[in-house]
Length: 506
Image 1 (cartoon, rainbow, N blue to C red):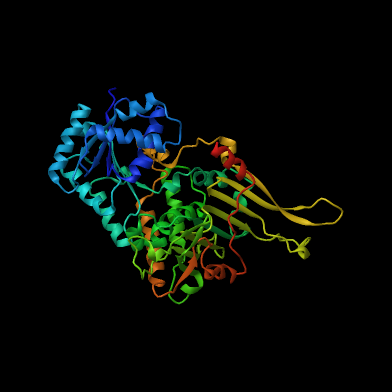
Image 2 (image 1 turned 60 degrees about the horizontal axis):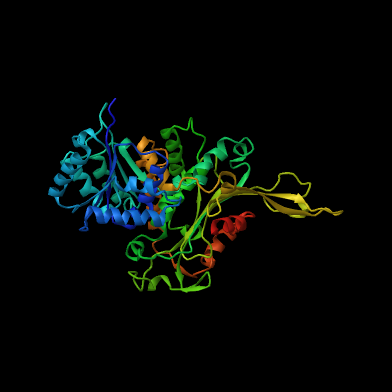
């Protein structure tokens, strides 16, 4: 059977995402022999640039940002697959030119090629591009025996549920749901994927993964970085829309979902959506007891002084946008009723960390009740120092009965090496083979937005608290959890951290 030519088109190909992530990921796929012989990369952007200029820039970007050692022959082979075309996304005549160009490099009619469209552009342009792809028959709805066409795009997918619905309508006017790949790169991180294996492949964990044994769960996504060059976007979004609505909801659903019938794409997605539907709604009456928002003031990160948020470029000097959010929520189902989930995320915090803490209840028998033992915990580190720590009580050597907390650490890199696929390497490969498991279905997006819209509306009159850059957020966030007799677990380096740091510095 004749092999179809695959055309991978990047809209916004001169941007940071393409240079830092997409091109190095494509190099990795070339290195691993995952690209077909008839695979071409079509780089599209508004900037006036020759094909040779873009190829030279791509060569340099891949050399700079590739996580694996460069092989010159492989790099030259990949670069030879790249074609650059200047394209005004709003000019319909440019799409006619694009169609002719695809047919010239593929030596096939456009409809006979496999087509992947990566929209590395602002969401406001999605509809314009999709409509033009449809009008010029660059993207036709897939039918049996036809080559596939697929579209990929990044968050933010809208700014509330209504705008998300409008964007989705524009996209689904052109593409079937099974052709749409909504990216949340957190889903491609190894420890996130490992969550389901950890839970459902181990009899020592899953039977205890419920309200009978778990006291509470904490999910933290902390950044030391500020807003960088994203001030204009971030001041309209804030922590809730930038991180909570997507990354944190994905982590939450994987932690809280019931066992699916299978690891089939739709079975897993169905269980994730069920979690979102089960989250109790917020109200203005009790919002101050379950939600805290903050904004960073000036401070020090790694010994270097950093500016306050409201003095960052493109940020309003009287901005009320939250750069920190701490949230307590409850999942109103039989599995989790009564178990609080505490979520927090923020910028300019003391440590960069993404982790999930499973805090177990105290032992139900009283043999050591007079010793006030620490609760058992499991800490799942998504980044950095990917791994899992199991925290439990053990006797200190000696004649007296003294019990102390000890850790057992699983180091992902120590076991499997440093070359696990990077998120975009995995995501691009999955699109090429048609696997949507790590991508977000529309109803996941919709229900996550409904939750955030409800939270935003309920908290619009709430005070925003300042916190010093380099701290772990406002004191009011500590009170939120301490009022329940609990405390935030401070992210700590595991026992293997120094070894990894030393290896990675070589």
